[in-house]
Amino acid sequence: EAGVVQSPRYKIIEKKQPVAFWCNPISGHNTLYWYRQNLGQGPELLIRYENEEAVDDSQLPKDRFSAERLKGVDSTLKIQPAELGDSAVYLCASSLEPQIRGYGYTFGSGTRLTVV
Amino acid sequence: AQKITQTQPGMFVQEKEAVTLDCTYDTSDPSYGLFWYKQPSSGEMIFLIYQGSYDQQNATEGRYSLNFQKARKSANLVISASQLGDSAMYFCAMREASKGGSEKLVFGKGTKLTVNP
Image (cartoon, rainbow over all chains, first blue to last red; front, side, top):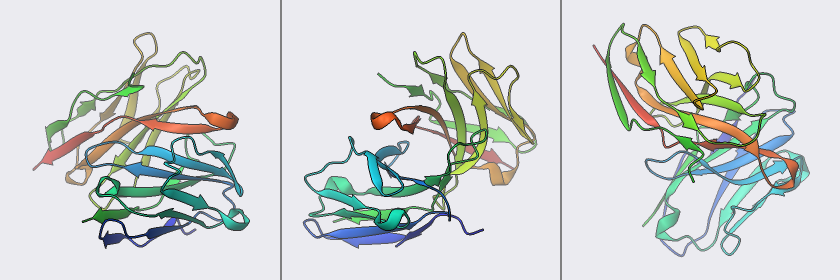
């Protein structure tokens, strides 16, 4: 079974430019998460989807960040325009509810964004 | 206030020895779940072990065990017989309720473990 696939793995952009990240969750996983991990920190939730509905986007900076999950499968996270402080690793995860003893969450390898 | 506290920014251990990574948590919810993840330099988060708040016994998964002390709100990870491949960042996380009746993981800042040969 393929894991959570993210692309690109690395991205370097100049500030004020737009950038997009893509995530393909595990087949059949109804819940999808985007986390941001700053250097030396643990991941923090940006947005959570249940199927195609964003059920928690309270931590998403909506002035510059947007996300979508078409047809409840793949998801795209966009930043426009990017700022220097957006440099981080963006992790996508998916899960199947109900979980069995924590095995439900599966993370992708992340996209490392550097804004210069 | 921090929900998950990992007080050890870095830990060193000799190969084949055991090591304990500390984690304390803060919640008023009687039902919660605690996780430990390993993050190697390649970046992916690898699930190691899970402890439910109502579990009667400490969780174990191979060389990993969780020392769960509910009254002290601590959930320390014990790695026995350390291997060079165990060198990585380790994150403690707690599942908690979030907006819309859904749940999310809240992570600590992590501990960098280095296994010396």
